Structure formats: structure tokens, C-alpha cells
Image (cartoon, rainbow, N blue to C red; front, side, top):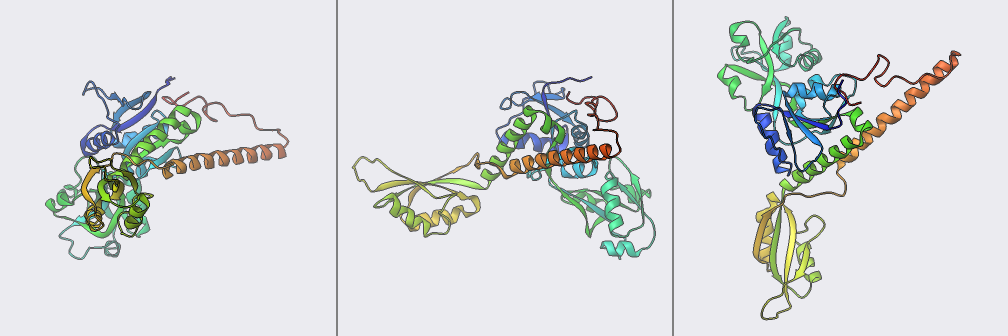
Length: 371
């Protein structure tokens, strides 16, 4: 039985999602070091005590759900399909900004009258649908009143209609080129789920182990700070003026020069001793850069220097606050349920309920879970 003390983070092991995860973490300042490319374990020097594992995206969700892994980066599509109904998987960040795709229904191009879900339902006959996402696909088809039978398949699904073992498919689509190459057409309103990479955690591990909670916070902090910084640049310029306050008023009168809270303005020491030169430093949105430079020039700015921003840390990330709120809500719910159970037993004359065993009603801890 596993009595581990490390905190585990699982990343995708292969494909574009794996490359995206490693690149994203590196951009966040969380470089993954893997000494042996054949090993399925690594570390992140910036996060001591964290063991990095590599799994298939779907297996990551199952491992986090079962508690053998504490944290994971995988696709929202896999989370929605495999997280189960027990609330064990908590999504900490739902928009890591890579691994974008959509789970969509696609029909053969030769079905000239079928373009929407209504058209599909109007066929009024059971349709064979090949998919790797039976739960999401079945739910979507039922909502649109489409008679169907599911064919769970692995590997390439696009050939299924051509070789005759399915009528249409529900599969992940990025550009749609593979569908076109196989003479398939996505339905206009047939998007089941829009997906991208997400950060997930085991709810019980967050509640029971301070190390897991602390590392989850560090991950959220780095990720949020990096994602916010991606949309901004730092601008430094020299400007003449009578005082920092006078220059600030000129800047506030422009549209793009207010910065996050306002500009930083400091005196420039120059050789001729002119006291009226100042340096201004402001953080602006990347898409407003050209407007920013033009406005600085208009009020006398010169020597404009632009640099990328690595991090912008907030006072406390909203997603960290959401995580704490979710954990506290679960704790209150469990306390309430235990109280109601106790009152129910007392009303039957059996006295207070006995405390459950460490692994719940059915026995010991789950294999691979933290003890």
C-alpha cells in the first residue's frame, strides 16, 4: 500500500498537448527537468517536493479522481468525460490557453440535407455514432432528440463512415482539415464542448494535506501571473516636465497611458544638470502599444523602450480564492450532512453515529491514495 509523502503532478505524455504543457510551464518559469527521456517521472526545480509524472490525458483525470495523483494538466474534454459524479476532481484553472480544440459531430459530405442537429433529428432513424467520448456524446444527442447507438472506438475515427461501421462521428477538431480530407462536414450547431488545457486537483488531497494546498497555490500564482503578463508590455520613456504630478496629468489625459494603477515617474540625472527631465514607466496592453507610443510622442516623450513582462502578480488570484471557497463549501456541506446523519440515528434510539473508518464505509484507503 502506497504511503507516499511527495506531491504529484501529472502531465500529458505524448503529442501536442504534451509539448504544449512543457512549453507553457517553462514560460511560467516552471521548467520541467527530465534526466532520462524514457522515464515517466521528472521534477520542477522551482517547486521542490513536487514529483512530475507523465500519463495519457484521460488517465490523468482518472488518477486525480482516484487520489493516486494530486494535481494534473489535461484537456477539459477529458475532465468532462471522465471526472465522474463524486466531486473528487476540482478544476483549479479552466483556461491555460493552449490545447484548444472542440468536440464536435461530423457527418459525411454526401448527406446534402444534413447541416444542423435538427436536420439530424429529422432523419427519424437510429444513427451509429463512433466516438471516444461516449458520456458527452450520448448526453448531447439525447438533448437534441437524436436516436442513436454509440460505437466506442480508438485510433482514427474519420474513416468510420467511409468503411461503413458508423454513420457519423463525434471527435476532437482543431483546424478541421482532417475532416475535410476524409469528406466529412461538422454540423453547424454540433459542437458538444469547446476545450483547452486545464489544471485540476484532487479535492480530498487539497483538504487533507497542507503541502498539496501550498503547491496548488504556487502553481495558480505562477500561471495567473504569466497569463496576465502575456497581454502586457512595459514601456519606459524620457519626458520633460515641471514635476511628476504635471507629467502624470498629461498622461492621464490620454487613452492608453494610465497603466495598471498609474505611471511611475522618477527624475533623470543628466550631465548638464537640467532638473526637468523625468523617466516614466508604465505597463500597457500589448494591443495598445502603437497607440501608447503615439500618445507619448504627442506629449513630449522620447527614447521609448518596450520590454516584455514576465509576471504580473495580483494581491491574490481570483482562482485561488475560488479554490478556497470551493473547499470551504465542501467542508460545510460535509459537516451539515454528518450532523443530519447523527440526528437521524439519535431519533431512532441508536445514539450518535460512529466515526467512519479512514477509507470510508467500505474499508481502508484507496490503493495509491495518500494516507
